[in-house]
Image 1 (cartoon, protein in one colour):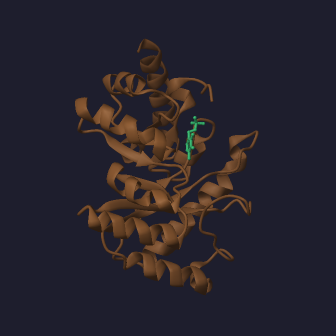
Image 2 (cartoon, protein in one colour; image 1 turned 30 degrees about the vertical axis):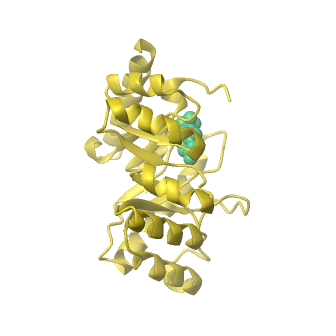
Length: 240
Ligand SMILES: *Cc1c(COP(=O)(O)O)cnc(C)c1O
């Protein structure tokens, strides 16, 4: 408990400093505490330390953990940040408030369908792969201007029309690099893409940029992150 609150206050100081450097209001940045591999008791300790937003990356793990925590703390907001297999879309649509890792047209169709069946409005972020790594998940953009990528535009046209979803913005995973500065171009590209999308699809709310983790969240904040996903800096190294 003291370890978590000590770590948390250090992370909050770093968030505040990065926000100051970028001349941003700190309240525009939400810390999503990534509790994957950690038990419900750890989540409870983090809630007692003041955290409200939590991220999980595996559906199996979240299936027990979210209701266990929710019984005592119903006000907690849960973020799905990991790869979602299509066959788990129904479960995800019922468990989580926001899905950051929406990376295919097939998945987003299914999330829409299952959210509708459960009479929910699911918040989603579109995950983009901007690092050029073909093996990574995410939508890709051909070139650097959506107006010139007809295939992507066709997909977005369909996505913004889907029912039971609220498209809130974009998410990306930066490449793992030795120096966080090397991730900056990826974060900047996500912000630029968001700006293009919000000009073209002005009726949607593209406010969120989910980017930045333990090693690079300060750079992400300088580039406009509104949701940072931080695990190790709060909970220490993961065992698995
Ligand atoms: C695990 C994970 C994080 C948090 O990583 P840390 O390095 O522990 O801060 C963030 N985003 C995603 C998608 C993750 O899977």
